[in-house]
Each structure stands twice: as structure tokens, then as C-alpha cells.
Length: 409
Image (cartoon, rainbow, N blue to C red; front, top):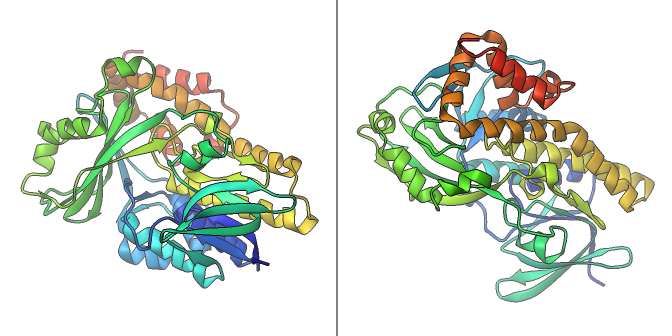
């Protein structure tokens, strides 16, 4: 009889590997599978918020990540007309007051190695093609080096990122969710001083955003994200690549990157931001991180959500194993934990994103944020998702605060 794992985790990115770490250190028999050999590149903005750094610290690997990351303590928001709002990352109890930019080629491997050192198992390259419910287990089927392979587990976790194929095939997702389209490239030889995490709304089609995240003093991850849904689909470029080209050729970016060379191909990638409407569980299955749509709809940040939801899944699974209950009732309780933690933020961000449709309004909002400490603190806490700030406020109340702080009111 084949081995029965306690948990099989599909996907060894930050979400999956974090979950594996927390489960393995509690003594569970955990198997991580991924379709790629590691280390592998992952197209992303590479930013790690204070919340992500907090989890890395808990895992005992923050010092190692600090050694390979580029540290920044300020965020800069740039409006369509070039208005700038700059602020320090706030200092919160037990949290870092800075961000790190770390290429995913390096970061994901560090987190995976920590999970393996804690006792998790890992098989790759494994392409999972099916997940079927049995009486008391789950059968995972797939291919490894052109050969059929199967695993059995008491629970399965989807940590498959933006790739929806498996979720659609197993019926957990009923239809393809609307996604953000993004593209990024690395640039080397930068001579300009970039000492902030730049979130740019200039020379990008709205609602959308651009970013310049320094990877070192002379290199940066530069990218763009597009929201093509609703009315915006009428004027949005069909591809993120074309919008990226326009962004890079703009005067501000040409000045910023003067003398620099493109050090990587332009890579496009989808981003799921649909947590407010997305499932997080099924029969003997959990869905975490971007696979559950857990990426901030305003900033595009998802590593912190992935690691946090992975830890939450591990803690809830520990409880489920302790009481021997793998029922839908217990899995619904996990969903409720996620909704309590994130639902209000995602509803708020979905509504705030509508402001992006109006360039005049966006210019006014950024000017207001640059002049008001209260608005800047609100923006910063939404950007890094400090739940204590927005909990208890209706989205309409927060939008009203923004409007009341705008110039001329």
C-alpha cells in the first residue's frame, strides 16, 4: 500500500512552502510538489512588506533574506501629473519598519529550503492533473518526467498561484476569474538615486499602476499592472507588454533609467485579486494565497497574504487533526477566519480602485495625501494592510475621508 501523507501541498512558492514549514515543525508528514525544479524564477514585483518580513522572522530566516535583499524605508506614490507623496513605512509593534526587494529566484528557494529543513518532503517536477476524493483520503494524480504518479493524503492544499487550470478542472472554481495583467523586466546600470519603493500612476492606463522597485543601488525591477475589467476594457491595451513599452518610453522613466540596460526579457503574468468572491476550500481541500485570489487589488502585493494564509491554514489543520474532524463544517470555519481577516480590505480596495478611472481625481487624491498626515497614514496602512486602521470603517466612510482631504474643499 502506498504511503498516505497527512497533507499534500500543490505548489512550492511562498504560500505552499510556508504552510509546509509550519505543518512539518509540528510533526506532520507533509509532501510539497511543484511542476518546476528549484531554484526557479517567478515573475513578480519582488517586494516584501513588513507583514511578510514578520513571517520570515518567525520562520527564522529573516536574517538570511536581509543579506540578499535590498532594504528601503520609504514609499513614493506618483500621480498621473507627476505629483509625489512620500512617506516612511510606519513602525508597528513586532513589525519591521522597512521593506525588502528580493528576486523570487532567491526568495522562494530560501523559504523552500527552510520547509525541507523542518521535515517537509519535496518532489519535482510534478505536474498535478487531478485531485479526487476517496472515502477518508484524497488521491492526487499527475506526471513526473513523462510517467504517471499518484499520492494519497488526508488533506490537500492548493497553493497554485494564478494558475487556475487545476481549480477549474476539479470544479472548485466555476468560471475563469477576472485577472490583472502585468509585465516586468529587470534593469541594470542605473545611475539615478532610487531610495523609495515607487508606485507610479503616471504614463499608465488607468485603472492600473506601474512600479520601480530597486533590487540594488544600481538595478531595479520595473513593471506595470492593468485592470481590464468593466468600462476600462474599452481603452485598455490588449496586452501588458504594449502598456509596459509605453511606460518605459515615457519621459520620467527614460530619465530615471538613463544609461541603464535591460537585463532580462519582458515577462507577462496574470494576477488574481478576486478573494472577495473566490472559494477557499472544498472536500478535504484548502485554497491559499493567490490561488484564493489573495493579492491586494490596489497594490498588487501578494507574498504577504500568501504566507499569512499559509500559516493560518497550518494552524487550522493542526486543530482539525487534533480533533480528527475533516468535515466541511471545519473547512467552513477556516474560510470564516480568512474572511474575518481579509474580506473588508478587499471590498474596500475594489471600491477604491474605481477612483483610478478618473485621472483628475487621482491627481487630486495624491496631492491631498502628500499634504495630510492623516491621509498619508491611511494610505500607508491600506498599502501594507494594517487591519487595525480600517476595521470598523465602512468603505464609503474611508472614501469620504479621502474626498474631504482633497485640495479646494
